[in-house]
Amino acid sequence: MHTGLDDNEIIRSVLNGDQQAYAQLVDRYQNYVFTLALRMVKSREDAEEVAQDVFVKAYRYLADFKGASKFSTWLYAIVNNTCITLMRKKKLVVHSLDQDNVFELADSRDSGMRADKVEQKSKQQMVNQAISMLGPDDAAIISLFYKAEQSMEETATVLGIEVNAAKVRLHRARTRLKEKMEKYFAEELSVWQNP
Amino acid sequence: MEEQMMQMEQRLWELIDGQASASERSSLEELIRTQNEWREKYEELLGINRLLLHSELDAPSMRFTKNVMEEIARIHIAPATRTYINKKIIFAIAGFFLFLILGFLVYGFGLMRSQGTPDISIASNMPEVDKLNFSIFFSNKWVNAFMMINIVIGLFVLDNYLGRKRKAMREGNI
Image (cartoon, rainbow over all chains, first blue to last red; front, side):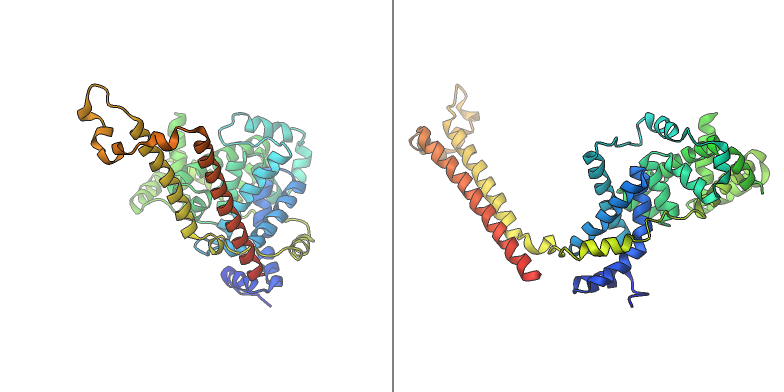
């Protein structure tokens, strides 16, 4: 019914009382929101809770969305705040980019991953696995740039940083991702790179 | 050596992301064509880029949209913040505090007594202020307490007014 409408048209229709139109936005952005949440909270259960909370909050404060930025940019800010709130509530450790123990923590979480299990996983799952081993900041920028297909400029806007800073951050995140892949998926990586 | 490698990777990533300038692009393409080290690194990074480009977003449970729609069926959209925040009230509060600060400053300067150098005394340059005998109004602790209570009551009434206005706006919108 609402297929083909852009985000702002759907939002206008929701604000005019068509609550069911909101399902269109949920369908459109659920994977994006869920993926970003998963990168931060590292658990599917918590990520689903966060994602649901994000859409409920977004609906409640939809009248505050001015349309000056993309809806996905606005959603990212809500995801970020909701994840931080959940982490505080559950007293989870909030990992930052500069914490030295981020990688050790991620390593220890995945140390149980055996080579035979890894072999069974698809390329897609392994990329996701490697991203999930990164700190939330690295994972977020990679998810935004590659998975949410945001341009460098949009990624910088979403993260509230300069384009040059986004470039440097993305470069560092990719370097760390490469290190993770080389460490855990060396064989697969060589096969994919030299098929 | 490590720094050189980092720089090399950064330049190559800029080329892959399409962020390199035209001159930088042609210079990098030349390096890739002529030097093995650059070519190998470029292909390595290109491979990672391909992997990332073909990766997909994770998906929540199948019932996700239904859960969200059930949840929002119980709530209402809040009115936009800009509709119930009246700028005049914000300015009135700012003016109120500014007036208070100025009042206290004037009172403070009024209490100042020049000591030895009357020329540089601010109080001496404010004859009108000097004429006022503030001690009449402010020497009594009960008067001071009364003023403080008035300030608190003023803020309480303002908060109450804003609350009622917000409620009225919400009822009007829903």
